[in-house]
Image (cartoon, rainbow, N blue to C red; front, side):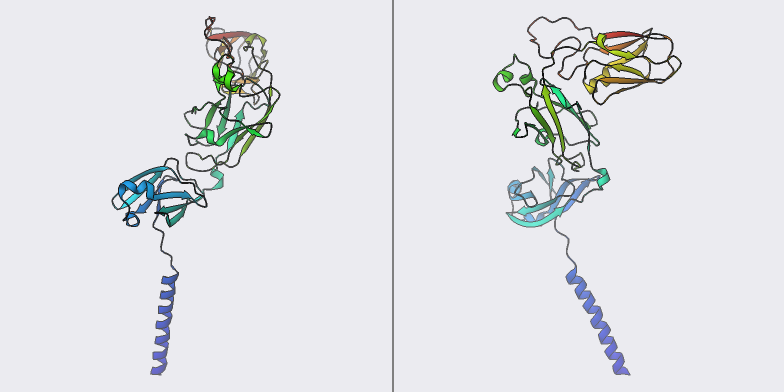
Length: 362
């Protein structure tokens, strides 16, 4: 009986030792590199200084390298020292869902994957204005609207203009960051120096767009939002370039469909051409006979040729007016007071600032 007890005890000990041993051997130690987070954005990686013991501090930026996995592309950033750690902060936050490799003296010491985020939070391009598929050859700008705040600093790296399906054009856009405060709308200017025919860039390089040609505005999906998340998909906008627009907008040519008194029906304003979508939302005011603003919501149609105004209160009988800021432009940048492609050395008529168009509700 005692022998059975001894045998059972030995078997139990062996089993405990076996599972303890296999558990230890199968457990993988975490890699030396860790991620520093700011909210849900990966803003830095941390490397214990023990892996850099043979690297002088002034050589860290040369001997400690971060690569995008399966490529020779080094991530650009800044190094700092904190206690026994080296902190690397990339200029642009790490991209969610991608893998990065850490090298010291050309030897791989670790690789990290920035966890992907829920696909429902993926940023998207909501719209590109003008939305038309035929645009004047002296088109001045595009507006690109995003569902989430985007990263700044390398916009033109993600935007391309292809002519006739084969030629990717260079030096087309103005290298200038023009974002709204929320960083959800980018104003993308075609180079004004190439649009204005009396300037040297136009004479040397020609206009950005040529009448009769087909173009594709391509926006790459590798553009990151402010949290380092990639766009959901590429966007391709196809359009043709038509003849130049060399005529200023004229409010006298607009058609106004008036609502009924005592209702909250929409006031419909039809332009005789598409106008700048964003400026149209900001520069048109509806006023009563005394010049007081009528509160309400103004919405511009997708093609930028119609405005719908919904009042907060019921319409009253009497005279009304549209008050239009002269800075409202058409797609070629021509505003109510002057053409965009005009020699500024010549004498110009003074601006009215506000143009008015009367209408009556009975």
